[in-house]
Length: 94
Image (cartoon, rainbow, N blue to C red; front, side, top):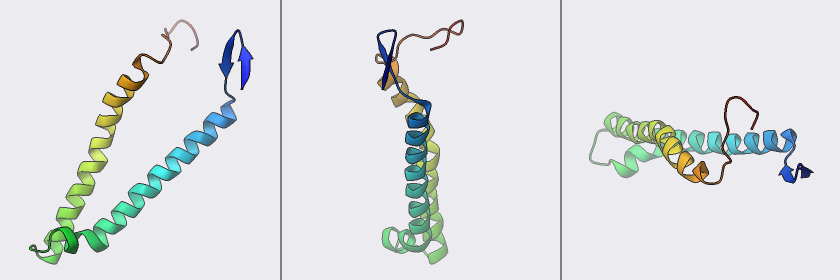
């Protein structure tokens, strides 16, 4: 980290690498969950349904997780960074 004007800065390479790692882990998580929803979850969590209906029910839980993620990110992200982030206006760079 470098100090510029009394503040520590991080290189763009480190930020890009951290973003890449986070995105790769999140993709892997959803990929594994989607595969398990297709092959395993229908029979394990919905045994009273027919095979196709159980698979569709497991896909529905996958869809809820997929669509709820941006909602949680927008609400929790603003709570977490609301006090930690410095104010930024459009007239200057942050």
